[in-house]
Length: 187
Image (cartoon, rainbow, N blue to C red; front, side, top):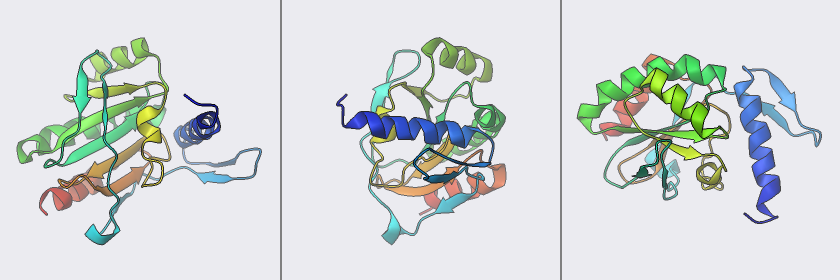
């Protein structure tokens, strides 16, 4: 990690914490405003889509997870300490199970968490999909210059061509997320 990346990581951490705070506006000492997400899914037209960065990392249980092209992925950025993350967990679990047969792969990105806390959360929730342990924010930072996850929780839909097809900031809503995933996977 370079000295140059520290302010970026600090800003993302502040943004992440603000996003988990529950929907209120807050401002940092520099005056940059942040409004937490409302969970609505924004689906981008094919012409508006940015290429997703290469995603690979160790899971919270020590295996390796790597995204490949040719498959639709749903990335959910979460932390065990985040109340909206815990609230949306049953929605994600159910939609992951429903869309698996269509070839959709869910992958969690555990952000700024203790590994033991993430593992305990995963054992309790049993989401049915792996989570990359991203304590340092490396995966999160790799989205810089594209369509970044700007709150915790955030959910990104990656199309089969490896492009960011949709984003939700905040806890997702069941029907809206399922509809967006179906739209992208049917393309």
